[in-house]
Length: 258
Image 1 (tube, rainbow, N blue to C red):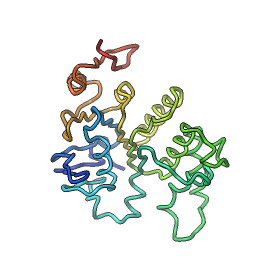
Image 2: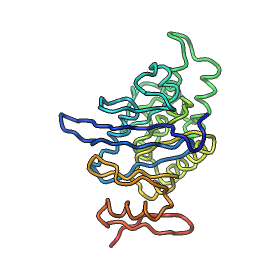
Image 3: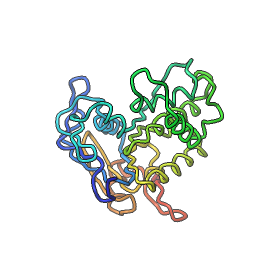
């Protein structure tokens, strides 16, 4: 397992285009193993694009390394076992039951056409219980609310039991209690040695992470610890001083600056 101070992922000289327009400009950034890093910034900053590059989902110039190895050189199965992905607005067939959707996370471990193993079933149950989705495991995805679907998709990502988890807007459609559940779950994953990299619009939740990457206009403007005052100043600046970071009840929160 990677040590606390080693890099779980590293991006070097990343450039990426969307529709022939360059949206990431020579980004180099490392993500420490065994820590949670939140990526924040205004709309159009390139946050989700960077996360998709890290997930090997977008063509790009430059190199991404996963656990010390060039991501592009890894076999697809090895990459899928070590790196789990939860994207924005992901969908699955509405007629699939929730349990089968979560089981998709175990495909990297299953031989071709082989049925799920006991280990696969155990991993799916752990994941669905962790996301409080176990009670509707036999319900079709099309019968679930937006928040319930999101928790099933999160269970699919957790079922991979990967060393690194990439999550793009994981709090979408979750009500406040389940947003808190997600936060506690991430802290538990990190305590167990996993690495979490998330894009969040909920700045106060993002400040609960260990580290923060601040982005604007396709570039990283700051990378530091969430408790560092320099990080707070960079965060306020990238949002044009429209928010201010304060300490409230022992926690850092971002409040409207009005």
